[in-house]
Image (cartoon, rainbow, N blue to C red; front, top):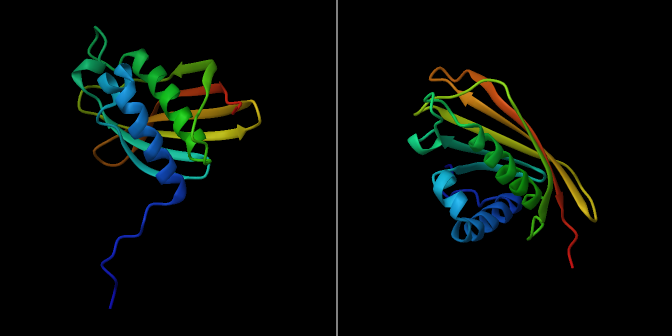
Amino acid sequence: MASTQETPPSEALQSVQKLWARQKESSPVYQYFLSDIEIVSATKGVITAHLKVQPNMLNSKGTLHGTISACLTDWAGGMAIASTGMDKTGVSTDIHTTFISTAKEGDLLEVEARASKVGMTLAFTTVEIRRVGHDGAKSIVSTGSHTKYVKQR
């Protein structure tokens, strides 16, 4: 007979969720734009999250504002660092976003971030934001890279 118990979250997922709970409470920007984001998975160095595009995320053309892609690159890069077990994810030293396509209100975004390297003083991450169609097909909205100063005292 199969067990009905849920598998406990991985250590990486627990680290990410702990950091996100702390950051969400102290960041008005994250509260405004990312309050509905759902972290769907985390392994060491990689996180995946989902976010539905809301009206407050749109530009004057009615499509996803570039600020949201940059904000997601910042947020997801930090979460990828947290998935390696770090309790603090440092401060941004460089962030770059490339806009490839867009999304509309109601679209589901999938955000995948990878910590390429977490060293003694710097961490390097890459982020890909994809729109998920009703048929499950995915198309890239933007890509980003994020470097953070992470020296722990």
